[in-house]
Image (cartoon, rainbow, N blue to C red; front, top):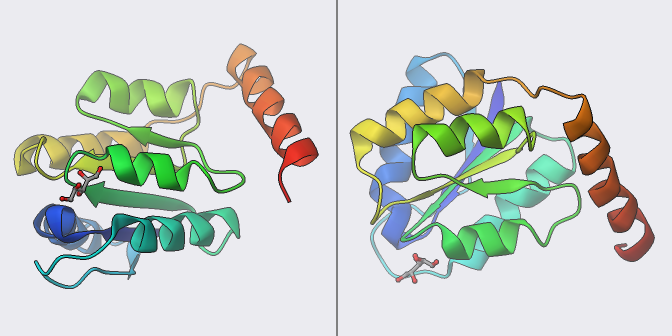
Length: 149
Ligand code: RB5
């Protein structure tokens, strides 16, 4: 799968850890940065990953900042993005099954590496259930079509 990944300084270490796991799993990873622990602004990286997903350049995105909140806010500004801030396995599963989330957001200062690894693997392998959930997503898409460029 083609996956874009990005973080700010607070998410950098977890982003790098996840990136290595994804590569080992055979995924094609596009890393938009950041590349170190120096202070940067999460919107710069969040928008870039969201745009790659929105434009269909990659199938899914993963974003990491300190809490995950900033990355979630910024990614969800982009048309077609359903970014889900996930802190446990239940929300990882539900974000795929019911929301068909296309971006996974993690908090590097909240979630440890072991749990993050399980979340990523679960999130990537859980399918959207469709049915009544599809109709709800179509309502979001209809609103986006009418109100967003
Ligand atoms: C950076 O210090 C921090 O504010 C940021 O990573 C994030 O937690 C925002 O949601």
